[in-house]
Length: 407
Image 1: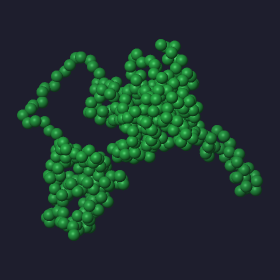
Image 2: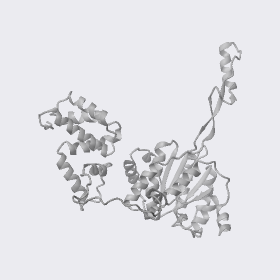
Image 3: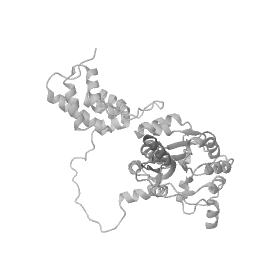
């Protein structure tokens, strides 16, 4: 038997509680607005307010619009409708608690729920805001500084701001013509087969010539990302960029490798990044470990190349090129990968150094089979990558010879 949820008096207190609960859900990221609050109040007039189960069902039916939001709603409901003050204290204690089992992993959305339940930050009383002062020194804005700041040197607040910027990046891959065609009255081609089919309706007389045009669509994008210890900070940022791209584009395939290769395409399709990254962490066993680039590329060529590299795919290889196995098997597998795709772009954070030179065996083995060699260490480099992918691919050449001549 469910215990009573609300004290019997009037509807003003109930409406205020529903409104505060909607604000809590909105702070955790759920799309709850005025329309949902009105619908929830109307739904509560048709149920027994003494039943906790009916109350939760009515609010969920009016405030939850996506299946992945239900778990977060259930936890917020259990905390808020028990006692809002006690829930706030419990959330703050859980954040400040130092002793926590390492094996216990928080559920997706728990951090957002704790932050939403915590009291808003306020300035200390008695402190007056200093009068505004004008400086005549010209300097770059905070946003411009963030564009050029290395991911490795970012603080936690700057990383959060960088992730927000990445979600606003748009990846307009250039459209490529396919073999398929569709009917179009203004198309440049005459559809002879369609004209013959239409003539059968009129005794073989061709009365109209239908037209068609070739279908154009962006090529598939394949991301093969190094998650070894030397790439840890860069991978953390780049996965947010890849997650945003995978949720707005079709035919995006993502693979992570350290000492083995893992396909995380399905996990990154989840719209909530916190849930997506927790699912990725659950299936990737070699995070921040060693690197076996040759072995990972060999496994990709053997198991996945024919499935995902069709129709002129663009491949982004994200790695610093430092392989624990030296250059064993790298040249052969890079050559096969290069011949299987339309464009192979290598993103290397080591290019941020002005004095970079391809001296290691792994980098020298990989460079001859790369179409573009780009840095990936800040937001500005990612914007340059977006601009590169929006242009038609350049001619293929040996980048190792180019670097040797430049040196």
